[in-house]
Image 1 (cartoon, one colour):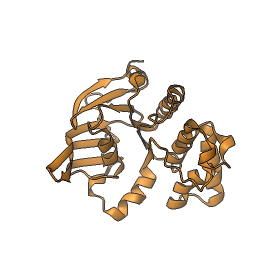
Image 2: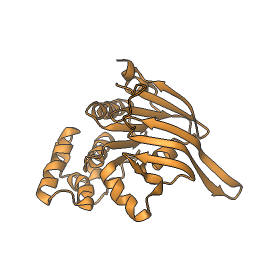
Image 3: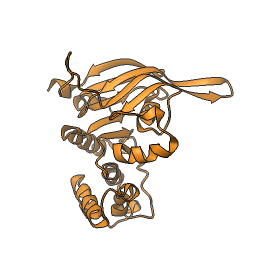
Length: 242
């Protein structure tokens, strides 16, 4: 995986500068992130690891614009996410970032195909006939084209997570964020999902995944370890040395 060299002026696709996030509690401020500075290049698969409460999900939420930094800056694909108004965030997120959650978050009353169509309907980027073709193509890409007409409850956990990834890719965002995407899956299915994320990164997507999977290093270009809301280390993964 190519890393920027000294003198290479290509900007990172994700950049956090001294980003912090604190939440008020009855006992005072709870600091979830403390002065995180991190740059991620296009096409990287970056794994964010750390113990529970280390700030992993908060970091992903700041990149996605789901949460805002208390201090510092967050830039994604050239946009200062921290400066966007609430009314701008949803439209920006729909075009720029796809998010995959641990518990899938598929709408239970919609078919799998309809779940994948939903982000395209929201953004209105494609006419209905082309949107349906794209949705079917994405389901084929993640290996569940034959499940398109079923409701989420009829699918296995692994199939639902594949559907969630297809939905996250609906508007062809440059960045894919996955928050514990294997946390609710058995080990064999988790391996398949991590392989799928690695293939997406190899095809040009920038993938940031929060995970407890111990062998993520063999797929990742870098592994970022958080401890108590701070970056404790940034180490190259095995994919960077391949």
